[in-house]
Image 1 (cartoon, rainbow, N blue to C red):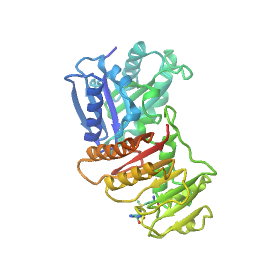
Image 2 (image 1 turned 90 degrees about the horizontal axis):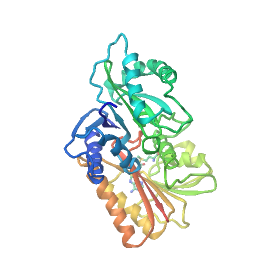
Image 3 (image 1 turned 120 degrees about the horizontal axis):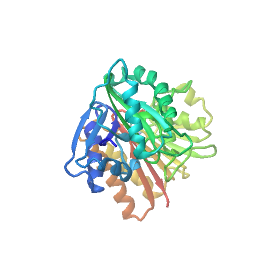
Image 4 (image 1 turned 60 degrees about the vertical axis):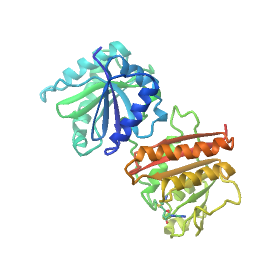
Length: 359
Ligand SMILES: C[S@@+](CC[C@H](N)C(=O)[O-])C[C@H]1O[C@@H](n2cnc3c(N)ncnc32)[C@H](O)[C@@H]1O
């Protein structure tokens, strides 16, 4: 098999956060000593000194523990330029060669970096998808029911692509880690998409502690205006107390499932314990983290889904610090919990956190 390297998709502009969390994970897993890192908008590559290490690291690093890494795969170096006359033949040969090491592929994905330069490659990738799939089928290295790894082809330019694979149980269930959602008709804000994606993330296959929003539940939404998150929950039959001094959009006010309270979210106390605390307040991340920890310690909710805004330079450090504040406070009070963070596709300079209280 060709020498492999670790390849990670991330949000353009967040390459250093992606690289530093992967570096920490690589060190923790004891692999990749002396390897070389490189990044370009939308992705990070780690070329291990020992070419076998990348495949081992892709198994050992827990994708669910990563925050800024959208999708993780192993790939060859893709250094040989592709001829614009025939890109198909060399890509098929490389996939065939890869299949001898990792078995038949369960799926084929074509990708490109999620930046301006990368997105122009999308038509090329889409045009080749069917033809590469035919080639996999003709060579008997495609078995959608076989539960094997996914074949991945990532175009870095019109004449450069890496060929690799991803592990379905330890990577994103979406191509390139991108969750494409249409803004629902009548949604009061684009923030609705953030919550829709977050709710999908919480029930993703492989999530060891799935939680679902469903009819009959209750939620408190701090920093609710204009009401996208409250509206999404109400659409699912969840009764919401929306806390914000600002006005809610008309369709949110009109919902019988939503009650508006004009109060400071940092001072609000629930009268009855809701299933969900939602918090999208724009404020210092540490202040929001302390608010979440306080709700957890007092048992004021069962799950807290919250957003940390990261306008600062040291964004990963800030997330780690916020995580530590919540973990320390809950641990000191012997509260059982699960805490996870992820920069969702619809998150911009921010990350989403989920705190599940209980064992
Ligand atoms: C990003 S917006 C929330 C968007 C909302 N999630 C949606 O889906 O429409 C942030 C909101 O936080 C509110 N906010 C800021 N500080 C607050 C506080 N201390 N208490 C309550 N709301 C606050 C702002 O008024 C603003 O409406």
